[in-house]
Image 1 (cartoon, rainbow, N blue to C red):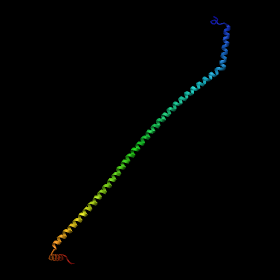
Image 2 (tube, helix red, strand yellow; image 1 turned 90 degrees about the vertical axis):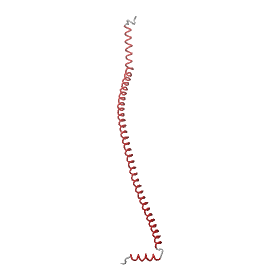
Image 3 (tube, one colour; image 1 turned 120 degrees about the vertical axis):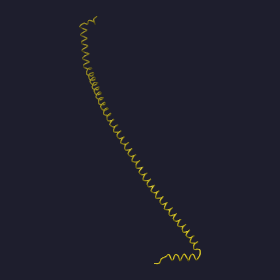
Image 4 (cartoon, rainbow, N blue to C red; image 1 turned 90 degrees about the horizontal axis):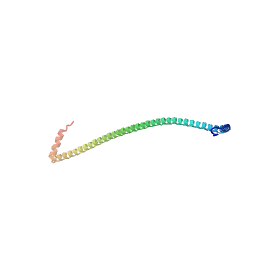
Length: 164
């Protein structure tokens, strides 16, 4: 029953042992424990500050990424527009060149046809002239087969010629 009703000696030794333990804890344990707690608190604050800074950097990077993406889209659209313009220009140039080449070929064909036509007409005239000469020659041979016919033709021609 002594523990339920402690005596003065027990209380004294309990106070002395508690004071010694309290002194030892204060002398050797409180400062390191409080230092560790303070150090832990600072590391937690630093971690929170770093996390907040990282969060802000992530927001900045995200907005920067969105800006870069928008710039890339604008550049892509510009490149596509330039490509379409170049394609249209190439098509119109090709059409223009083809049209000019077609006109040149048509002109050359017309000139060739005209030259062929003139050559054919000249050949036809030459043949007509040759045939006419042959016919005239045959007619004259038949008309002038006798000496009398020749003399009468010469006298007729001399009458027709007027002397100045």
